[in-house]
Image (cartoon, rainbow, N blue to C red):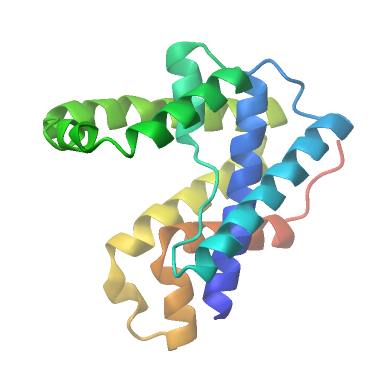
Length: 193
């Protein structure tokens, strides 16, 4: 249970980062009371949808960083367009032919789209980190967190001798990288600016 609680904490922090990047890409000021109001509403919405999903035996849902990639590709950040697209997708979900058409899209096409989309998500993240100021401390924390988050899941043998609780916590790249970032951030005091 505690590893899942930590993953939910990291997921909430990720949602806040995604929403901050979306604000930045949308031309909204990513600071101040209005920004915190948007963040709290988004995290609350994630919590409600995850709770409802759990009641029906489904997986939790969260904000998706891919939205930032879509905003960068299209240049459109309007909520109204988002509502129209959500309605269109909901309606198309009831049309079997659409599902068959999506199923026959060649994997290289989907792969190329995913490559572009996730590359743009990484750029949005780097832009967000750079706008907050990336000193030596922050650079080391980002580098080590990425290394732990990407490295540990690729070498599961490193975790075999650990207690089950710790192993469960570190098997996921999200929780391993998040734990590294939180631990380093708390252990290494920030210099006064």
